[in-house]
Picture 1 (cartoon, rainbow, N blue to C red):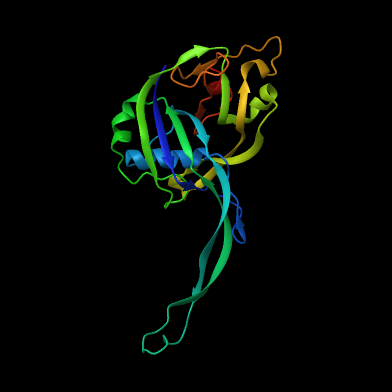
Picture 2: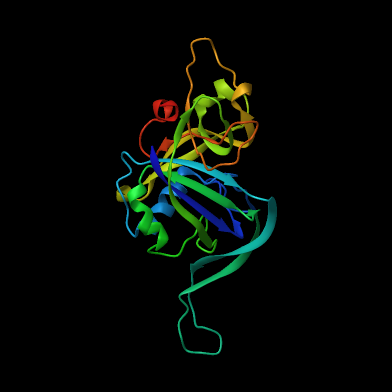
Length: 245
């Protein structure tokens, strides 16, 4: 299977949990699928129909850190601006909070759309991941022909929740899968597993009737004779069959 392989690197990034508003902003340790959709759409220059588009991700970083940020909480105001005859419109105060950030992030994104290669060589908008100020650079944009294999290793990736039966590793988490942009950005959530370590195929927990095989990147690093296995996802469809197909 021919796919588009994009390598993007930055200085810092942060993927906030959607239900934290004040005090502290923790980060996901993996970009949510909804974030990756927005990233691809920004490069293409328009929203695209996600049906039939599959993606696999390999994401790593050097360290998790905390930084101090502030927000301006505004309310309607009355009266005049100090020292002038201009009427007040808004007034407010500054609130400090801690934000967790990921230092030196690196994203390797695989898309089953090799025909998009020219878009990623000349992206329409600034390349960011996470917040708008988290600038990234595409250090590699290539077309790779994946190979089918049974033995492989998987690491630093996003997996369907159903993979817990095979690996017994990772962190189960609820993430935004996709935003309905035509319905005021209504979020669709799905359960995933974030795997921030390496698991060799020989360590998989497989039953006698399990028949697993993966697409592997032939250009990836070889570890104990195995290469990097990829698990593909969809933005709008169920992942169960896609991941193992």
